[in-house]
Amino acid sequence: MDMQSRIESEDVRVRVSDDEDRQSSRRDLEIRGVADGDKVRKQTSSKKVDSGSDRDALEKTGGVYTPPFKLASMLNDEKDKGSLEYQRLTWDALRKSINGLVNKVNATNIKNIIPELFAENLIRGRGLFCRACIKSQMESPEFTDVFAALVAVVNSKFPQVALLLVKRVVLILKRAYMRNDKPQFLAAVKFVAHLVNQQVADGIIAFELLTVLLENPTDARVEMAVAFVIECGALLQDVSPKGLHGIFERFRGILHEGEIDKRTQYLIERLFAIGRAKFQGYPAVRAELDLVEEKYSHDVSLDEEIDPETALDVFKLDPDFIDKEQKYEALKKELLGEEESEDEDGGGCDASSEDNDAEEEEMRIRDETETNLVNLRRTIYLTIMSSVDFEETGHKLLNIKLEPGQEMELCIMLLECCSQEKTYLPYYGLLGQRFCMMNKIHQANFEKCFVQQYSMSHRLETTKLHNVATFFAHLLSTDALPWNVLGYIRLTEDDTTSSSRIFAKILFLKLSDDLGIKILNERLQEPTMEESLEYIFPKDDPKNTRFAINFFTAIGLGGITENLREYLKNMQHQKQVAESESGSDSPVS
Image 1 (cartoon, rainbow, N blue to C red):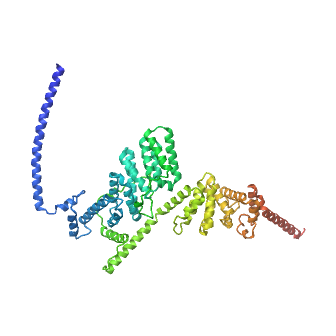
Image 2: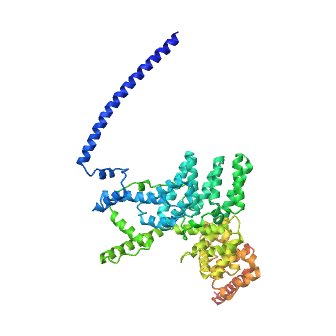
Image 3: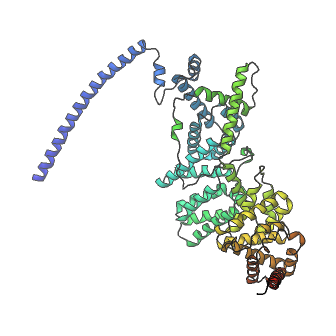
């Protein structure tokens, strides 16, 4: 009874409190109604007093909707082009225009959308463009290849805009991975795949992403990795077949472990079937979306800290607004092929020429960041490492367009790849021989590389030292490199180090193996080589002569020092004769 009475009393107390709450809420509604009525009356009176409330509302962060015709009239009415109101109005117009163009782009009308997009100030609105592309792609992943093609075209003219978009997509990818947000992560993965296909993003990020997904495989991660490889596998097969082969080996290992679901195993087997068919039916870029010839890739890694630059998405007063708008107008005419009006006066022509000079100066400064050089080295490296034989590599490397002065990069990258191998591969020597015999420029560059590598031999590890010395020995034995480069070697005790002596030892032993000791000795004894070899077979000091004889004897090539031994013997005999003559001429006490 006591328990039941307590429950009934609690019920009564709850009903009383509910009645009190209803009464208090009713009073609150009445008070709010009165307050709202007063507020409405105040707003109607303020509208009668102030007719410019729309512009006050525009100064807020979000702004209000303004019909296009009214926005155009407000822009025309504004006389001060540098004022805050005018800049805000143009910012709103730019945002609406970019959003509209991005939202209506598709594979059919993309060629018509691009000129309209370039007509807008993409430098000022690069944050708006990136946000619009990412938002549209996240909402419609089936149009990802269209958005990637649009970004690729923008990248060909404004690389900094595409770089910002790649950074933001990678950042979204990382955040979605950390939060385990599968829908957003799948959309970001697909966007990255098509940016790699369009060569806006570098292919290295694809392998980084696959490595992360397959490091600790789960059903979801393996499924995402399979979808990613299907999207961009055709490009990776052309760019880096060895890297793609490693990814397939990892998939095969996961399949053999048997720790994933049957459905996921079927996905991997389907991927293997697509890979065996060379990704037929899954092209990297559709023909109607392949719009750019000269492509520029951005290297953004998953490990680096990324600044999304979100401040570019919001309006900010720009004191140089008018000057920047004029510069972009000149750039827009150049991009769209519009002719300048002939009614401009001399001052206008001078201003446009100054703008062009400033733009050229800006372009020149941007080119000095050596981003193109890094991309060139990466292309050469991937070409060397992905080819089957040296003939295929030589053909592909010759198709790479090199700017004047960039031929040296080809020789440097070839030596770097050779030095990184665990053992020397004749593949590199044959490739270097072909380039030396095809062009004298490459021959001169390899001669410079020989001098540089010999002078820096103390910085090379033993394996690298062996590979580099063997590489140059092959070039010398095949006459791809002139033998006068040996004149840079000074074989004396004071001028050599342990590393340089090892370099010379490997060089001459390789020459002896390739040519034979007899032919090598004949080549070294040629009259034309006497001047070049005066430091290898020194005759200026008996100490240096003995050092050279002892060096070649120690490495098993004492046969090439016969002339030097004869010279040392004659020099000692002459010295003894001179001493005996001086002794006989002296008076006897």
